[in-house]
Amino acid sequence: QVQLVESGGGLVQPGGSLRLSCAASGSIFSIYNMGWYRQAPGNQRDLVASITSMSSRNYADSVKGRFTISRDNAKNTVYLQMNSLKPEDTAVYYCNVDLRGRGTGRNIYWGQGTQVTVSS
Image (cartoon, rainbow, N blue to C red; front, side, top):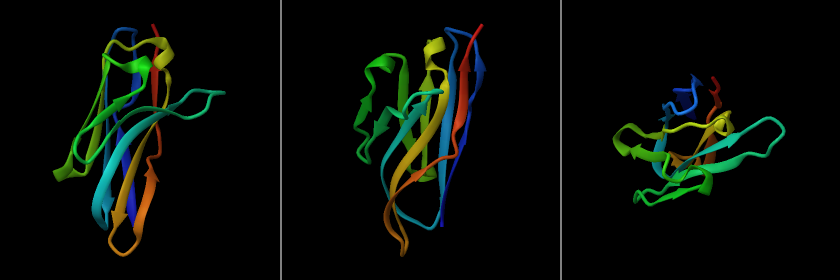
C-alpha cells in the first residue's frame, strides 16, 4: 500500500510565498516522475510542474519564473516552492507520483489535495 500525504497549503496575500510538500510512503520500489496539479472551482485539473527521476523539470507557462519544483529522493518527497503568488493561483493543489510498488507494479498515485488561497 502506498500513501501520499500533502502539506503546506493555506491563505496568503498576493505577492507572498508558500511551500507545498508531498511525501510518499509505504511499500515503494522505485519512484519515477513526480508532479503537482491544481484545480480551481469549475475548471479542469491542470499540470503546474513536474520533475523526472533525473530532475528534469517542466512548468506551466503561467508559473514559470515564480514556482520551483524539487524532490528529495531519500525522503520520497516532492516540493513546490511558490513565490510571487497571484489571486489566480488560488486552487486545490494535488501531488501526482508515478511509482512502482513492491509487488504491485507501476501506477499513478494522487495526494488528497491541499487548498491554496491567494487573497488580500
